[in-house]
Length: 450
Image (cartoon, rainbow, N blue to C red; front, side):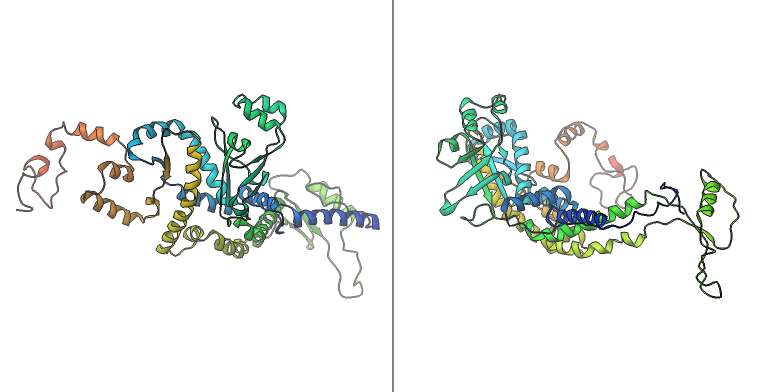
């Protein structure tokens, strides 16, 4: 209904569309379109490496599908990670040292896996007595022509900030103060103060290489556009509009085209006066050509089928982890594919983590290892656990650990060993014994159902 612009009334007619107004509207639309085309969420694939890396990080932070698939992959790949001595004779010393650095190592390992999944590159940086960190790849420049590595990092720290970092040695502070960029190699002075190791998928000599997520930028941009559209439609649901339609059009007869039955300002004002502020049961009398409507967004706009095409394309990138989670039909072979992908990536990550661990001054050489038990089918795993224990291949401690129990079971077993035999035997089973015949309802040495 016409009138002032409120939530209960329609807005006034727009201003006249002059050339100046049209030009302003076009400029605003063009600016928004440019942002959609070239922004981080756009489908444009950047040429610059750092722009691709920033875009990959953007989709990791904003797209639930990417984050969910990659985080699931990380959780499986890093399952059962532990630090082991390179030589068994150093086990006691390494166990004590690993406990001391456990928190620092766990943090670095988590960051390294995340960076590797998103960027396909990890830049590990550490000082002699400092915590190792993963340096953002989009703030680095790296070359490895002929296998000769050179890393340039941009720390962007002011001298005041550097002086305030109490954990830095005088040599480390002096190195940082030389400039916003530091060039590191394996044999220069700065490279000995700030040591580094780069893990990457790209071919040796190609530098960092582009993130694999680059191939999905267009699909992820479409995914984001669909989500933004749904959000805008849902936002319309915040405004509840009561629309009163008055009058009708005369199409035939001598009065055809006459506006005599059209809504007028007087009729609209009278209707608003009658209805404004009224709640509950309202009794009104209307003509046959008056109706009340409540326009709402059509539910078909929220149909999830429009995401199916994008999801299918993203599943090609996510591979077995997406198919295992999203496909309705169970395919036991997918877990084996997933397992071998994990083994391949663990092999790459192990070399990097071993280098970082050596920089944390262990008392003896160490290495990392993971467990493959997370890739076994639960029923098959239970049978393997039982068989391996009965054949003597594994210990009771392994059985308890993999069954979800801890060492408290040892204390309970010791406590139960002191109880009378009748309290430790199984309850009476009518299929295999007679009542009141020995402890537990069964006489020792008696055959089943004598």
